[in-house]
Length: 341
Image 1 (cartoon, helix red, strand yellow):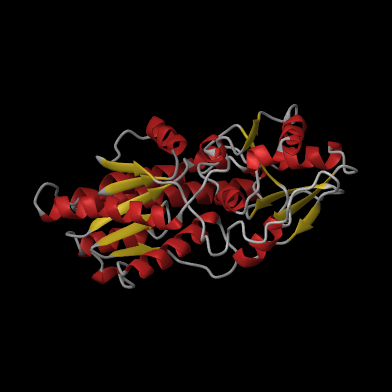
Image 2: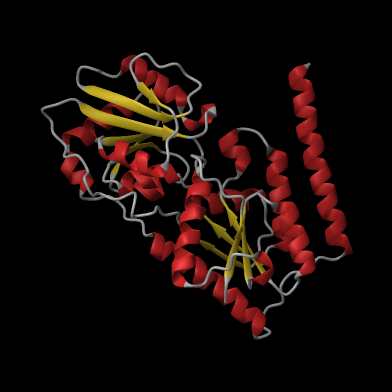
């Protein structure tokens, strides 16, 4: 069985999904099970709302192929908008997906609250970093006799990525004891926090390893790749008690509720640094890739042996798909119109 990932990969710094899927593609190549062309694959893995038109036409052209949907979200929760995109995702999932992979238990629960018609083949598989890049090699040792170094990362400048908390830290953190750097795109102009524009994975790993504690205050974040990368580089984390953060941090850091307790949680981790560092969660790209492969293999073998029949594109499916796409386009167009008005 061979797998193709249907995704428009970017080599420049981009979102966490792009980074993870690129790394997993390389891992599947190393296993000898990756197919470069979708037409020749047995299983096609597609991601969230990306490439849905291609997914539809490939399913129509190759009805015998197995299609697996990788989901995070719901998008409307962490963006605070775009309910129409979620509706499109759920429609495509219902019509075309033979299996679904959620990125965290939190994400699965939240998606199930909104949409009740996911396929019977479903699982949760956490993202994982490229350990040849994001690892503890050359991690700077912690010392209480210098300023404690904090770091936060966000490729997106969406306010729900936690910029209210970062702004609070910029104004209230004791910068005689701490220093902090933010890597990514920020809608906030910081006075005390140093800002670095988005960088590639290798440079990001080097910067992470020069710091001590990772801070994340993103809201409704299903499975933060940036958090996983920081933990893998040996940084204990202080994260907002929301989304998938608790599942990833576990005992390797502390959770906070808001501006009222974040500084005390940072203090707690700083005062017990080695304890938290020894409790860090471990993430394996090899393990995650194997989990993806064997999940897909189960559906493929069941279909091959007649225990499962892959979903087909019929007349009703076509009509439903077109209405969903048109509805999404109209919704987005109306938002742009009223925004201009």
